[in-house]
Image (tube, rainbow, N blue to C red; front, top):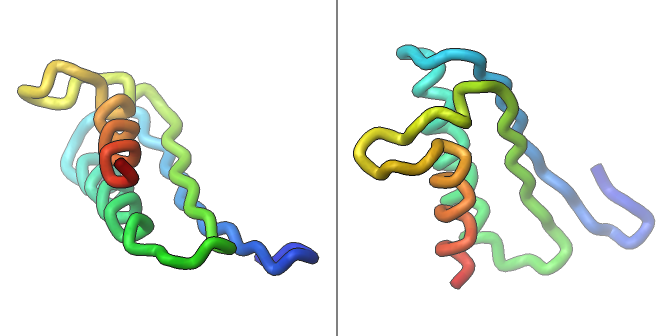
Length: 80
């Protein structure tokens, strides 16, 4: 999608209600989307990850934080 100023937005949206095999793959998809978006060197392209559902509020294994918090850290640390 392009605006009048030639800014492009790319988004992924995942709704995940409960944990499980395929749902865990959705989580990995978002992690990869974030990692790939970090390599973007264009100033007119923006990447947005939208995570919806109870799944993202559950703890992320041994880390002790929610999956959503882990994704936020991944995005923030990637730009630091």
